[in-house]
Length: 504
Image (cartoon, rainbow, N blue to C red; front, side):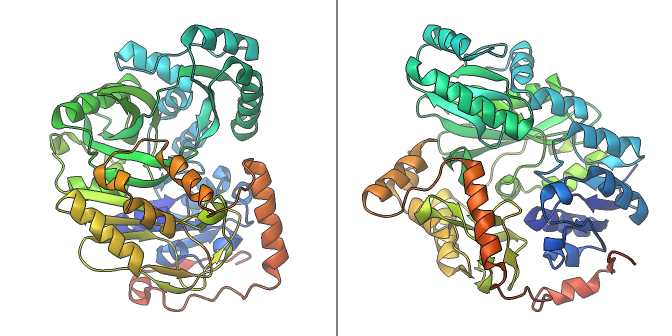
């Protein structure tokens, strides 16, 4: 049955992004929001908006039961989870369906298989998809890990079976590093995912991170939309992506695309998803599958002329995707993630109130953002403010347009990753397309050697504690968030919004 009204179980730029596609295809939207997001753009842009209460994710956007209750109360017939929060939560997906609603995403079983890295590796081996050499089962302890690593040869990677977002991963270069790395990575995984199981993979030296966008329907059709290059990353967190990749030719593109299609079919996948590979010296290996829409989906949309969010909604309504098969890339697109971070201080989160905001414009410019003047950047959520996307007829044109975008951009009140992105895009390595997943770390190390930047805590919990303390200390001094002047009033007034407040 076709979707008529969608509740978006998310916030920020991805919520606004989904709302835009819904508007384009004539579907009403319902927003949910925390106390900290009461003035957010996604609240104002929705046809209806309902409070979740609280500030932290646990108090708000992770409350699946309340979100489903609001969906039914609002008359929504489907829920789109975006990315993060509940997007890869199989229980939530099942609960949505049990409540008589449509879940705009894959099945819980597909999430479970691909969310467990060991199960995913086994499924891919069975499907004939090449995987990185490594263990087929979890290693019981550091001693067993050392034994397998000795046989495999160093360097190796210790990886959490239930991992994601760069957590629970350590590179080990020698046997005497195993015990400490195993304890740290397993503890991190247990804290983050409630699952401390670890396995070992051979570490691929200087790989490139290449991912394939797929779209599948409930009728068994699976199509792919080529690759994205995501190798400009720090601690497994991406900063710059581009499509297509400079190292992937058409034959390799089809080979990787076909492998991604087989990966999706192996778990009866439905909806949009991303199959990630490591590429090195002409060979590629399955890394993992993200069972949701990716942050960087926009560059694929520009290069393949497709609205992936709209297609996800259509697939949920029963439509087929076979008519989208066989598309080839046209032109080139580059994305920069604009994060509220301080690159000169080891990418520590930057808090404050956004002022003097100026977005770039002109040909080939796309901005996916939830930022507005006087918006408060809090410590409660991910630091990403916006996605800047430049499109050009070729890579050089796209790169120059992105340089212009970053030079025109101004975000006052907080520090951002724009400066480091600008520098990287002008580096010889990027211009020549000669980079790998370790490039940004090496680049930042060179910057530190030249006296730029300071060391900061590596431990994520320590960083979070520092940021929350800073926020509380400054809360009394920070000026109030405005009620939202200067926010696309023509669009807001065109929508029939019914914003509900608690107690009413």
